[in-house]
Image 1 (cartoon, helix red, strand yellow):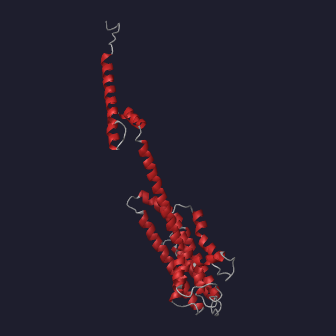
Image 2 (image 1 turned 180 degrees about the horizontal axis):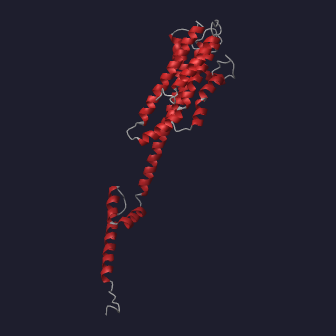
Image 3 (image 1 turned 120 degrees about the vertical axis):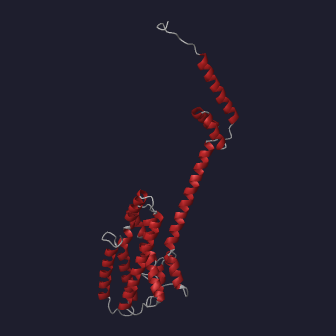
Length: 302
Protein backbone atom coordinates (compact mmCIF):
# COMPACT_ATOMS: atom_id res chain seq x y z
CA UNK A 1 0.00 0.00 0.00
CA UNK A 2 2.81 2.41 0.89
CA UNK A 3 4.35 1.97 -2.55
CA UNK A 4 1.09 2.58 -4.41
CA UNK A 5 0.24 5.85 -6.11
CA UNK A 6 -1.54 7.06 -2.96
CA UNK A 7 1.02 5.67 -0.52
CA UNK A 8 3.36 8.66 -0.70
CA UNK A 9 6.69 6.87 -1.01
CA UNK A 10 6.90 6.93 -4.85
CA UNK A 11 6.36 10.69 -4.80
CA UNK A 12 9.01 11.10 -2.08
CA UNK A 13 11.45 8.99 -4.10
CA UNK A 14 10.85 11.05 -7.24
CA UNK A 15 11.27 14.40 -5.50
CA UNK A 16 14.37 13.24 -3.61
CA UNK A 17 16.00 12.03 -6.82
CA UNK A 18 15.21 15.28 -8.61
CA UNK A 19 16.35 17.54 -5.74
CA UNK A 20 19.60 15.74 -4.98
CA UNK A 21 20.31 15.49 -8.72
CA UNK A 22 20.19 19.27 -8.97
CA UNK A 23 22.25 19.53 -5.78
CA UNK A 24 24.91 17.27 -7.29
CA UNK A 25 25.07 19.38 -10.46
CA UNK A 26 25.12 22.79 -8.75
CA UNK A 27 27.47 21.94 -5.85
CA UNK A 28 29.88 19.79 -7.82
CA UNK A 29 33.54 20.38 -7.01
CA UNK A 30 32.83 22.51 -3.93
CA UNK A 31 36.03 23.83 -2.40
CA UNK A 32 37.22 23.43 1.20
CA UNK A 33 35.84 26.26 3.29
CA UNK A 34 32.28 25.91 1.94
CA UNK A 35 31.40 22.92 4.14
CA UNK A 36 28.79 24.84 6.11
CA UNK A 37 26.94 25.93 2.97
CA UNK A 38 27.00 22.40 1.55
CA UNK A 39 25.76 21.00 4.85
CA UNK A 40 22.89 23.47 5.17
CA UNK A 41 21.77 23.04 1.57
CA UNK A 42 21.84 19.23 1.72
CA UNK A 43 20.04 19.24 5.08
CA UNK A 44 17.24 21.44 3.74
CA UNK A 45 16.77 19.12 0.76
CA UNK A 46 16.47 16.13 3.13
CA UNK A 47 14.00 17.99 5.34
CA UNK A 48 11.73 19.05 2.49
CA UNK A 49 11.98 15.60 0.90
CA UNK A 50 10.58 13.85 3.99
CA UNK A 51 8.21 16.63 5.06
CA UNK A 52 5.32 15.73 2.67
CA UNK A 53 5.31 12.20 4.03
CA UNK A 54 5.28 13.53 7.61
CA UNK A 55 2.31 15.79 6.92
CA UNK A 56 0.16 12.95 5.60
CA UNK A 57 0.57 11.04 8.89
CA UNK A 58 -2.44 12.88 10.35
CA UNK A 59 -4.77 11.74 7.56
CA UNK A 60 -3.34 8.22 7.80
CA UNK A 61 -3.96 8.14 11.58
CA UNK A 62 -7.60 9.24 11.22
CA UNK A 63 -8.27 6.72 8.44
CA UNK A 64 -6.51 3.93 10.32
CA UNK A 65 -8.48 4.53 13.53
CA UNK A 66 -11.79 4.48 11.65
CA UNK A 67 -10.80 1.28 9.87
CA UNK A 68 -9.56 -0.35 13.10
CA UNK A 69 -12.85 0.43 14.84
CA UNK A 70 -14.76 -1.14 11.96
CA UNK A 71 -12.48 -4.20 11.87
CA UNK A 72 -12.28 -5.32 15.49
CA UNK A 73 -9.27 -7.57 14.82
CA UNK A 74 -7.10 -4.61 13.78
CA UNK A 75 -4.68 -3.19 16.37
CA UNK A 76 -4.29 0.59 16.39
CA UNK A 77 -1.14 0.51 18.53
CA UNK A 78 0.57 -2.02 16.28
CA UNK A 79 -0.35 -0.06 13.15
CA UNK A 80 1.10 3.12 14.64
CA UNK A 81 4.29 1.33 15.63
CA UNK A 82 4.73 -0.10 12.12
CA UNK A 83 4.11 3.32 10.58
CA UNK A 84 6.66 4.86 12.94
CA UNK A 85 9.27 2.27 11.96
CA UNK A 86 8.61 2.87 8.26
CA UNK A 87 8.94 6.65 8.69
CA UNK A 88 12.19 6.31 10.66
CA UNK A 89 13.51 3.98 7.94
CA UNK A 90 12.64 6.61 5.34
CA UNK A 91 14.59 9.23 7.31
CA UNK A 92 17.54 6.83 7.54
CA UNK A 93 17.53 6.21 3.78
CA UNK A 94 17.30 9.88 2.80
CA UNK A 95 19.98 10.84 5.34
CA UNK A 96 22.25 8.15 3.88
CA UNK A 97 21.62 9.53 0.38
CA UNK A 98 22.46 13.01 1.66
CA UNK A 99 25.73 11.80 3.16
CA UNK A 100 26.70 9.97 -0.04
CA UNK A 101 25.92 12.96 -2.29
CA UNK A 102 27.91 15.23 0.01
CA UNK A 103 30.92 12.95 -0.35
CA UNK A 104 30.66 13.39 -4.12
CA UNK A 105 30.71 17.18 -4.05
CA UNK A 106 33.24 17.77 -1.25
CA UNK A 107 35.72 15.44 0.44
CA UNK A 108 36.09 17.14 3.82
CA UNK A 109 32.78 15.93 5.33
CA UNK A 110 33.57 12.23 5.66
CA UNK A 111 33.81 9.73 8.48
CA UNK A 112 31.46 7.59 10.57
CA UNK A 113 30.99 10.34 13.16
CA UNK A 114 29.88 12.77 10.48
CA UNK A 115 27.41 10.21 9.09
CA UNK A 116 25.71 9.70 12.46
CA UNK A 117 25.84 13.43 13.16
CA UNK A 118 23.94 14.16 9.93
CA UNK A 119 21.47 11.34 10.62
CA UNK A 120 20.55 12.50 14.12
CA UNK A 121 20.53 16.15 13.13
CA UNK A 122 17.93 15.35 10.46
CA UNK A 123 15.99 13.24 12.95
CA UNK A 124 15.86 16.11 15.45
CA UNK A 125 13.82 18.15 12.94
CA UNK A 126 11.54 15.28 11.86
CA UNK A 127 10.67 13.44 15.07
CA UNK A 128 8.19 16.09 16.25
CA UNK A 129 5.76 15.60 13.31
CA UNK A 130 5.95 11.84 13.85
CA UNK A 131 5.07 12.09 17.54
CA UNK A 132 2.33 14.68 17.03
CA UNK A 133 0.91 13.17 13.86
CA UNK A 134 0.63 9.58 15.09
CA UNK A 135 0.32 9.69 18.86
CA UNK A 136 -1.99 12.66 19.47
CA UNK A 137 -5.45 13.70 18.31
CA UNK A 138 -4.26 17.07 16.97
CA UNK A 139 -5.57 18.39 13.68
CA UNK A 140 -3.44 18.70 10.56
CA UNK A 141 -3.05 22.45 11.03
CA UNK A 142 -1.90 22.05 14.64
CA UNK A 143 0.62 19.35 13.66
CA UNK A 144 1.97 21.56 10.88
CA UNK A 145 2.48 24.48 13.25
CA UNK A 146 3.88 22.58 16.23
CA UNK A 147 5.86 20.17 14.05
CA UNK A 148 7.72 23.05 12.41
CA UNK A 149 8.80 24.52 15.76
CA UNK A 150 12.07 22.51 16.05
CA UNK A 151 13.16 23.75 12.62
CA UNK A 152 12.18 27.33 13.45
CA UNK A 153 13.79 27.31 16.89
CA UNK A 154 16.96 25.81 15.41
CA UNK A 155 17.27 28.81 13.08
CA UNK A 156 16.82 31.26 15.97
CA UNK A 157 18.74 29.70 18.85
CA UNK A 158 21.38 27.29 17.50
CA UNK A 159 23.66 30.23 16.47
CA UNK A 160 24.76 28.19 13.45
CA UNK A 161 23.51 30.76 10.96
CA UNK A 162 25.53 33.47 12.72
CA UNK A 163 28.21 31.87 14.92
CA UNK A 164 28.86 33.72 18.18
CA UNK A 165 25.93 36.10 17.71
CA UNK A 166 23.03 36.56 20.09
CA UNK A 167 22.19 38.17 23.42
CA UNK A 168 24.19 36.90 26.37
CA UNK A 169 22.20 34.34 28.31
CA UNK A 170 19.73 33.70 25.51
CA UNK A 171 22.36 32.27 23.21
CA UNK A 172 23.14 29.59 25.79
CA UNK A 173 20.09 27.82 24.40
CA UNK A 174 22.34 26.68 21.53
CA UNK A 175 23.36 23.70 23.67
CA UNK A 176 19.83 22.27 23.24
CA UNK A 177 20.16 21.93 19.46
CA UNK A 178 21.96 19.16 17.62
CA UNK A 179 22.78 21.51 14.73
CA UNK A 180 25.13 23.39 17.05
CA UNK A 181 27.16 20.25 17.80
CA UNK A 182 27.12 19.30 14.11
CA UNK A 183 28.73 22.62 13.23
CA UNK A 184 31.27 22.07 15.99
CA UNK A 185 32.31 18.99 13.97
CA UNK A 186 32.33 20.77 10.61
CA UNK A 187 35.72 21.86 9.24
CA UNK A 188 36.34 25.59 8.67
CA UNK A 189 33.34 26.60 10.77
CA UNK A 190 34.14 24.76 14.01
CA UNK A 191 36.67 27.44 14.98
CA UNK A 192 33.93 30.08 14.69
CA UNK A 193 31.50 28.27 17.00
CA UNK A 194 31.52 29.49 20.57
CA UNK A 195 31.95 27.08 23.49
CA UNK A 196 32.18 23.79 21.58
CA UNK A 197 32.73 20.78 23.88
CA UNK A 198 36.24 19.40 23.91
CA UNK A 199 35.05 15.78 23.92
CA UNK A 200 31.91 13.63 23.57
CA UNK A 201 30.57 16.00 20.93
CA UNK A 202 28.69 13.24 19.07
CA UNK A 203 27.10 12.02 22.32
CA UNK A 204 25.79 15.51 23.10
CA UNK A 205 24.49 15.76 19.53
CA UNK A 206 22.54 12.50 19.81
CA UNK A 207 21.08 13.41 23.21
CA UNK A 208 20.01 16.86 22.03
CA UNK A 209 18.44 15.38 18.90
CA UNK A 210 16.19 13.23 21.10
CA UNK A 211 15.15 16.15 23.31
CA UNK A 212 11.82 16.49 21.49
CA UNK A 213 11.03 12.83 22.18
CA UNK A 214 11.87 13.24 25.87
CA UNK A 215 9.63 16.31 26.14
CA UNK A 216 6.81 14.59 24.27
CA UNK A 217 6.94 11.49 26.47
CA UNK A 218 7.01 13.66 29.60
CA UNK A 219 3.95 15.65 28.50
CA UNK A 220 2.03 12.53 27.44
CA UNK A 221 2.93 10.77 30.69
CA UNK A 222 1.85 13.79 32.74
CA UNK A 223 -1.46 14.04 30.90
CA UNK A 224 -2.11 10.31 31.37
CA UNK A 225 -1.35 10.56 35.09
CA UNK A 226 -3.60 13.60 35.44
CA UNK A 227 -6.44 11.82 33.64
CA UNK A 228 -6.02 8.79 35.89
CA UNK A 229 -6.13 10.93 39.04
CA UNK A 230 -9.23 12.76 37.81
CA UNK A 231 -11.02 9.48 37.10
CA UNK A 232 -10.06 8.19 40.52
CA UNK A 233 -11.29 11.38 42.16
CA UNK A 234 -14.57 11.24 40.23
CA UNK A 235 -15.04 7.58 41.15
CA UNK A 236 -14.38 8.33 44.81
CA UNK A 237 -16.78 11.26 44.76
CA UNK A 238 -19.45 9.07 43.17
CA UNK A 239 -18.86 6.37 45.76
CA UNK A 240 -19.19 8.87 48.60
CA UNK A 241 -22.48 10.13 47.20
CA UNK A 242 -23.75 6.53 47.18
CA UNK A 243 -23.10 6.28 50.93
CA UNK A 244 -25.64 8.94 51.93
CA UNK A 245 -29.05 8.24 53.46
CA UNK A 246 -30.77 10.18 50.67
CA UNK A 247 -29.27 7.89 48.03
CA UNK A 248 -30.24 4.78 50.00
CA UNK A 249 -33.83 5.96 50.47
CA UNK A 250 -34.12 6.78 46.78
CA UNK A 251 -32.83 3.34 45.80
CA UNK A 252 -35.24 1.65 48.19
CA UNK A 253 -38.09 3.74 46.85
CA UNK A 254 -37.28 2.72 43.28
CA UNK A 255 -36.19 -0.90 43.63
CA UNK A 256 -37.44 -2.06 47.01
CA UNK A 257 -35.67 -4.97 48.70
CA UNK A 258 -33.35 -5.49 45.72
CA UNK A 259 -31.74 -2.14 46.51
CA UNK A 260 -30.82 -3.35 50.00
CA UNK A 261 -28.58 -6.08 48.56
CA UNK A 262 -26.84 -3.55 46.32
CA UNK A 263 -26.32 -1.12 49.18
CA UNK A 264 -24.88 -3.91 51.32
CA UNK A 265 -22.56 -4.93 48.45
CA UNK A 266 -21.09 -1.44 48.02
CA UNK A 267 -20.53 -1.16 51.78
CA UNK A 268 -23.05 1.58 52.50
CA UNK A 269 -22.76 2.89 56.06
CA UNK A 270 -26.44 3.78 56.44
CA UNK A 271 -28.76 1.84 58.78
CA UNK A 272 -29.77 -0.94 56.39
CA UNK A 273 -31.67 -2.80 59.11
CA UNK A 274 -33.91 0.18 59.66
CA UNK A 275 -34.47 0.54 55.92
CA UNK A 276 -35.31 -3.15 55.65
CA UNK A 277 -37.89 -2.91 58.44
CA UNK A 278 -39.31 0.18 56.77
CA UNK A 279 -39.67 -1.64 53.45
CA UNK A 280 -41.37 -4.61 55.07
CA UNK A 281 -43.77 -2.53 57.14
CA UNK A 282 -44.69 -0.52 54.10
CA UNK A 283 -45.26 -3.71 52.13
CA UNK A 284 -47.49 -5.06 54.90
CA UNK A 285 -49.43 -1.82 55.04
CA UNK A 286 -49.97 -1.93 51.28
CA UNK A 287 -51.24 -5.52 51.54
CA UNK A 288 -53.56 -4.66 54.41
CA UNK A 289 -54.94 -1.64 52.61
CA UNK A 290 -55.69 -3.67 49.52
CA UNK A 291 -57.49 -6.37 51.60
CA UNK A 292 -59.54 -3.88 53.64
CA UNK A 293 -60.87 -1.96 50.67
CA UNK A 294 -64.71 -2.14 50.56
CA UNK A 295 -66.36 -3.89 47.66
CA UNK A 296 -68.70 -1.57 45.78
CA UNK A 297 -71.75 -3.20 44.26
CA UNK A 298 -73.37 -1.44 41.32
CA UNK A 299 -77.07 -1.17 40.70
CA UNK A 300 -76.75 -3.33 37.61
CA UNK A 301 -75.37 -6.23 39.68
CA UNK A 302 -78.32 -6.05 42.05
